[in-house]
Image (cartoon, rainbow, N blue to C red; front, side):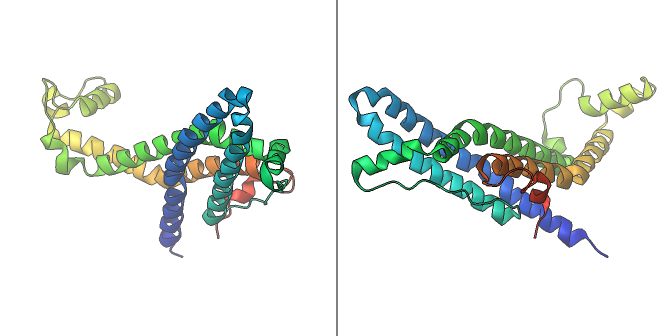
Length: 227
């Protein structure tokens, strides 16, 4: 049975889940943190008291987006209940008594952004290593060369052979291309597993923070099930 389509499909889904998460969290962070800081700073003159419910509603909107992304990726996350606000200014203050909305704000500002920054950096770095290494022979000769033309290959060969290979061979462009190709293949072969792990990290963190069900009802391994 050929599993290549399913692997590629899963890899594409993981990329579609991990990469946009960083930009969404970045936007949420630069929007929510200044507004919440402004609300705290102006609370003494009551402006901030009316601004905090707005910030909480915005945080809930980002939290709903996070839940929707987990479901689109194929994970399970239950929808929590929220306390409804009333009409008018006084009714909007009821949002301040909802712990769930405060958790949304905490997650979208202090948890999601660092986690998704990490997953984004690792995914981009791993992908660049895979593509750059396997195609090095096509573009590597355009790089500027110093006294030692191929430090990566020469260093690896010296470590593996104890300097038995002559420098003329170890520093050649052909050897450098082969070494980079092998490293790129290693990155490429492990890319699906790395992306799956990064997606699981993001999704399981979201489920733990934003899900409504207890841990025993919605175990984290369920997030790995992709439709």
